[in-house]
Amino acid sequence: MRVDYINEHLFVGTIGHILVLCAFVAIAFSSISYFLSAQNNSDEHWLKVGKWLYRVHSFTVLSLVGLLFYMLLNNMYEYH
Image 1 (spheres, rainbow, N blue to C red):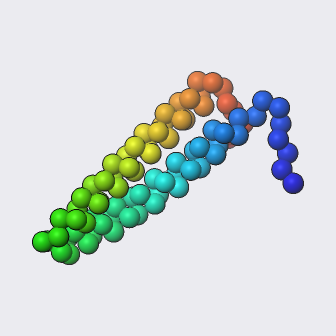
Image 2: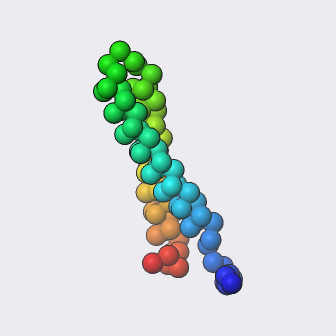
C-alpha cells in the first residue's frame, strides 16, 4: 500500500526515473552501434544510429541536470 501525502511532488520522481531509463538504454544501444560500425567499416548506417543515440543520451542527461536544479531551487527535499 502506497501513502501519498499532501503537496508531495511525485511527478518529478517519475520524470527523473523515465529519464534515467532512457539515458541508460540510449547509451547501451549507442555503444553497440559504434561497435558494429567499427566492425563493418563500409556500413555508415550504424555510425549514424550511434551518433543519434548518443545525442539522445546527452539530451536526457542534460534534462536530468535541469530536473535536479529544479528540485533544489523549489526545495523539494522529499527525495533524499
